[in-house]
Amino acid sequence: MTGQERDERRVVAVVVTFDRLPLLQRLVARLGEVDGLDEVVVVDNASTDGTGEWLRTAAAAADRLVPHLLDRNRGGAGGFHEGLRLALERGADLVWLMDDDGLPDPDCLDLLLAHRGALDFWGPVVVDEADPDRLVFPIRLPGGTRVVHDIASVERAATGGLLRDVVIPFNGVLVTRELALRIGYPREEFFIWGDDHEYRLRAERSGARIATVAAARVRHPSVGELGTPMMRGRTTYNHSPSDLKHYCMARNNTLNLRDYRGWPHVLMFWVKTAWFYSFTRPQPRRLMLSARGFAAALRGDFTGHERFLR
Image (cartoon, rainbow, N blue to C red; front, side):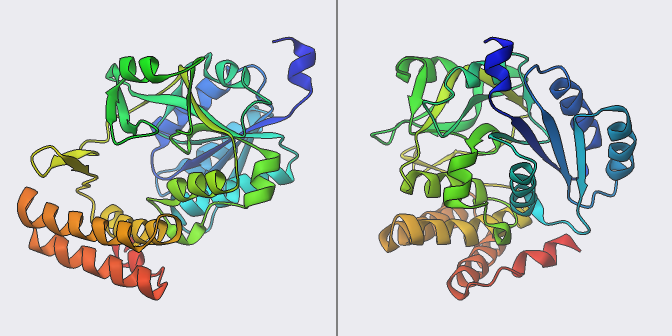
């Protein structure tokens, strides 16, 4: 890619962070090495570990670093809402969205930009930094129910280097200015869990061209028990030990399924949740927490997660 080609569009990275300063420092250092990146906007969700102070100092020495410090924790959803809005206000033609705990390979952006003009919402494969042959987030292959957990399966399923209609949002994804202006910003009221999926569903509904670039990599710490097998391995469940994450998942996934897939899918999700915490991992308390999340979704109440932040 020539310098003239790079100058034709403005690429702004948006990083959302909260209380993970060492990981953020690692990521900002890597982004500082990436050619063709015009700015790095870091949205800090009112961290308590010195992140804000470090960002102010680092920005004074790095022209491309733009701190945006929030006065309260608005979660990943609120952070990406603010970050995407700010990036577009600063003239971004492409916005590169990522959490603070991922680390894109040095050639990741170049590999993604090779598909500029052909895609609207696209990203890398997210691999386990301790085992780069494994996926951190299992991928359901398009056109069926098969879920894959390894790089080799992704590469076999890709056509022309792309796994079309699949992307892992907010982990190194590129979104075009045109698409963001068409579909808006992430739903900040979701706080965490499901906001990224909802944004992908909204992009899909709008007719966006979506894909994963099989050769591009973001390395990410293992997230544990996503895709936990249940019902004798016939399906999986996204179990999280965090009550905050589970409550938000129960609420937000109910809304996503209702709005984009219909009530039969909502009912199946509720049944899976009841089965998982009754038989696969019996936890009566988690059943009650799930029910509160489901009820909050039906009421349109986005305040219940706040009890977990105190």
